[in-house]
Image 1 (cartoon, rainbow, N blue to C red):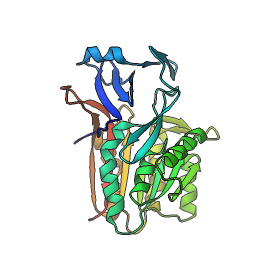
Image 2 (cartoon, rainbow, N blue to C red):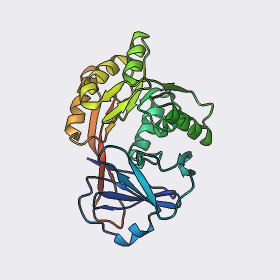
Image 3 (tube, rainbow, N blue to C red):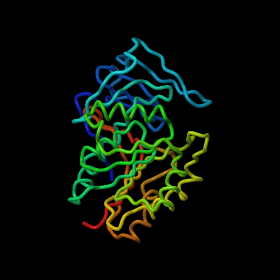
Image 4 (cartoon, rainbow, N blue to C red):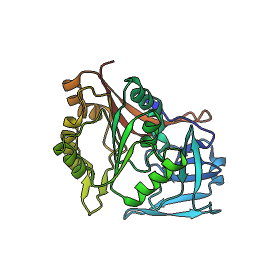
Length: 288
């Protein structure tokens, strides 16, 4: 199963190849690493238009080189939401367009129950899924370990007209927070999480996906309410796959019934014959 990112006038996937991806964010084109793009670019003439190219370091991180430097940051519209975009030191832009392939599905799941939906959003980054769920009517608990990233997400909420939306903004280590929520007997109707391969909590706590993922899943299952709606699990770590991720959500199927879908997230352009794989997903939804 392949799910392609949505399109918008403010964002465009242009091409991929030679280990890179070419995209337009607003009026600015960027060349960023994509190790799975092992083929040759299909639209070589477009790569000269890149305002910035991100060069990954062998020791982690990297830096940008610019042919003409864009503004420090700028707003980008996507549907009714507004995001601040800027080239970061990790090569991110403040939004993962590949996740937009799940936006319509999440909105439908949130609004389908006819009553408030409590969503737990972990590794929530700058809040795109948080804002999407809140816009659809959910009460959202947004959790990320980096204070500056949570501040960025709050600014996105304000720019999107969601400053007073029912969102709890939590800066914490995900494992510690989820364990506390279990002790408090808090429950959620839906969970969204996009765990990184590696990460650090606000007090230097280490997150290593292969070591900590099963513990996280064991802590999440008891947090589900009696009438759970959905779980969305996305991942960009090499070595993961749709069957693996589907297997990891089987405990939800065994406990609540419903169904699991799994597949690959891709970017595509009508001018390109090839699609760019950008990660994998598994999503569980309760019985209709």
